[in-house]
Image 1 (cartoon, one colour):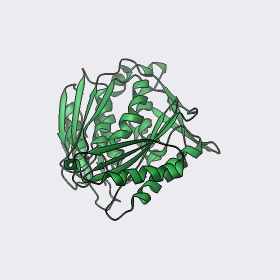
Image 2 (tube, rainbow, N blue to C red):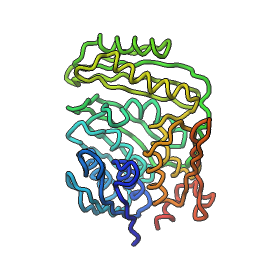
Image 3 (cartoon, rainbow, N blue to C red):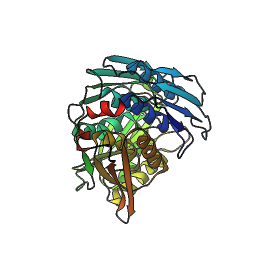
Length: 357
């Protein structure tokens, strides 16, 4: 049996290499071995959230796994068939629930029936997309591509305590639809969402006011949570366009003024808004895999990140596709190219079984 060999330190060298490999191994049935996992990070190897992603992946496909221990820089993963069902996983720290979801959900789109996936841990931390991003930005685009998906934020969990919980319901995809995001249309609405738990509401109000001074008129949404869901504070800025909704965030820290937090969120928001492109840097990374599964698609972003380039390379290891990346004054254009091994029928998800066979 063919095994794919991966170097976990390649490119941006983070956990995304492992997560993408897990998703595609489950979907294609191709086993993989990865070495030097997160070798360049301050704490190399598998952390709790990565272990949870591995364990969750193994649970839905009955995989044979070697090396799934804390700190391991080597892993071997041999998948079985993906099974629908009700799954529950606890990270046990503030490690990201959203990254675990995004690892397992693509495989469940090829399962033998509907599924629910409940993950507890961190829902809002600086090192991963917050749950609001998945719900407001990523989920609508997946639904447009033909995915049945409902993500609910049951409880917030902030760094370092965690304790949050998300619940996703999904089902096998009947027919994939291509996604082309090369224009966004005129801005319909921009909003600031100030979230506090165990932190004075005044902090969030100051953040939203400061963001408005930087970005113009913002609809304001104050979310005051029970103190036992904190302490925690995040400012979210939401830009709603006809074709896409983008969400930017900045997190409060002890000793950091509310105004500084707001400036961070406003700076990233303004960079995207002024670029004129439809897809922000982080959303771009998260569209690559679904686009490859659909068999066609394209988007324009404003940053050619190492993260994006590395993710493209991992996807190309598992699927007979190639990504064309072109930089111009208008931004960075990313398009999916099918190889000779992938015909027009590739759009039908049943073809994936032939690829893995």
